[in-house]
Image 1 (cartoon, rainbow, N blue to C red):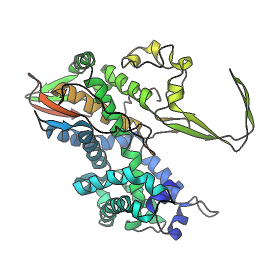
Image 2: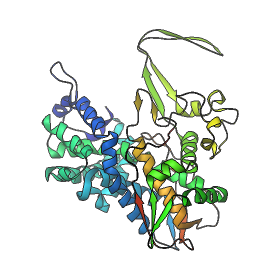
Image 3: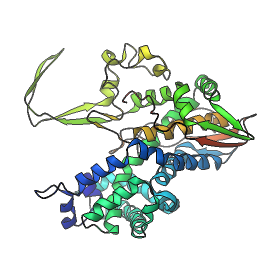
Amino acid sequence: MTAEKLSQLPQEKVSLFKKSKEREGCAADTISAVEGALRQVDLDGMMPSMLDTLGDSIDKLPLNEPIELHKWVRHCITIGSTRSIYGPHNPFHDKAVENAFWVFEHKASVLMNGFVPGWAAQEGLNARNTVAKALGTYYAARKHREGSALAQAKYDVPAHYGLNSEDIGLVEVPFLIGVLNNTVPSTFWSLCAMLSSPSLVHKMREEVAEIVTKDGSRFLINIGQLKRKTSLPMSIYQETLRQRNSFSASRFVMEDTWISTKTGNYLLKAGAVVQVPADIVHADAKYWGDDASQTDFERFTDPLRKKKHPLAFRSFGGSPYICPGRQFATTEVMAIMAMLVMRFDITPAEGVWNLPPQNVSMFGSVPPPKGDIPVVFKEREGWQGEWAFEKGEAGLPWGLESG
């Protein structure tokens, strides 16, 4: 329903997405194909281009002058993620397409509201159409054949059902909200947590320095070693998600079920919908200990202080529906945190870490900031030179609490 409203395909083509007696439907078959394309082996194949693109964005950072941190993070993640999906002919290399996507993402809630007059939704519609046209042109030229397995799956299944390249471009735009709009604020808030604490910066540098190698004048960060031999970067990231995540899982009640709580017994009727808000679970002392309501960015470095229940960490969903791209997104966040903290001294342009408040997001589980914070990047003495990422061991997962 969300994709239907945001793409606004003609009704006769919307019907192709629905299940019938003869077939599962385009939506179900696309989901199945996407899940197949998101197997670890395919994600590992996407990793080198993503890491190269992130490294290039970091190389191009302007030094010794204020830049807006969230705006830069948004660009860095957008280009890195889409390059890994669409390959060398990535439509988001066009700055106008990148900017249009974020206008669309910001206005998407307006487009979801069927009672909003057309003039109020026009900016969002124009932005969506800009992105959809670029994606449609990309698919029409068969450039996805040089892209990832994910890009190919996103074209092949709808095309089999009779959608043309223009239609597929329209359907693709809402999909990208799921790809981008949680990773960006997760990276931003994790960086803010780290950079605003001199103690965390110092400890991060101690840990990450152990896995940085040098090849002539080039510094290398091996992602496999970052996974194996560091704990603080992941702890900062997961505590950020634990504190800021607003995801709410929905589950249908399959049969009448009684549950017992401290306040009484309750009957959940078959057919009802149960909401499981992550922020409530994440603040529950029963699962996280007496300091559950406190923020401690070193919490996840101590195995004894981790969650007390296998489903207590809800930031990526929960069984049977868990974010299939969580390992890939985590690599993006960890890579950016590690390279920035090693290469640069990063200070607030105004002298104080006055972090912006959280905004609201209709589609994301991690709220973006309401505003931004200008920061200054300065190369660290003794760490100047060329930097690059190495993928390291293929298939080695991050130790996420959600698995």
